[in-house]
Amino acid sequence: NAGVTQTPKFRILKIGQSMTLQCTQDMNHNYMYWYRQDPGMGLKLIYYSVGAGITDKGEVPNGYNVSRSTTEDFPLRLELAAPSQTSVYFCASCRGNQETQYFGPGTRLLVL
Amino acid sequence: QKEVEQNSGPLSVPEGAIASLNCTYSDRGSQSFFWYRQYSGKSPELIMFIYSNGDKEDGRFTAQLNKASQYVSLLIRDSQPSDSATYLCAVNIPNDYKLSFGAGTTVTVRA
Image 1 (tube, rainbow over the protein chains, first blue to last red):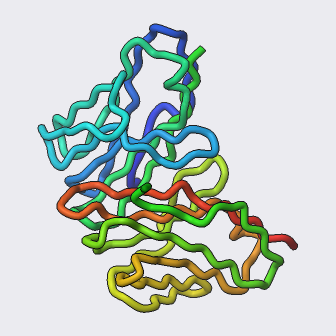
Image 2 (image 1 turned 60 degrees about the vertical axis):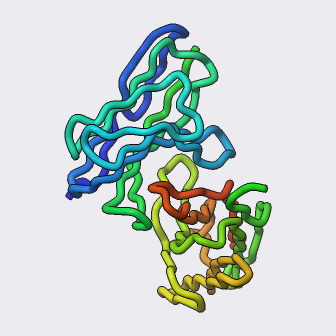
């Protein structure tokens, strides 16, 4: 199993551009999450999903959108990138409630 | 009050010593507790999880849970330079699908 994979590893965006961060898991996990982590800070939840077709906002959803059309994929869309979205983005998945979350390697995003 | 609080770091310990990390949580209904290790520039990786009161040992790591005091700790025995990392405490949010993460404690093991 590859576990949780994320692409790209690193990206530079100009202000106002948009992009999609990809996340795929091959563990047949129902639950998937997107976090951002600013330098020296903890993880902040952006969006999460408890199954295909079901998504919900976390604590910092503004400026982002998600979709979950399959169990495996959970892409994160940034519209109109802003410097405040410069961060490292982690995708995670888990089998069920109260279970261990497994993290992808992260995407480092720089908005200039 | 933050849902999960960890002792502020950084924590510096000599090689071979015991590193003690503490975490308190606010919701008495929490049932699942996790410790993650995060190396600089890497993603968090699970070290241990604990569900029941008491101690749980895995190699050089011991997790301790006291639900009455709403306290979970991680002990790293015989600390090695490779243990230098940030350690994140995570606690499940009752009746929800999410974990609440602490801000992390950075540990440096001096050779």
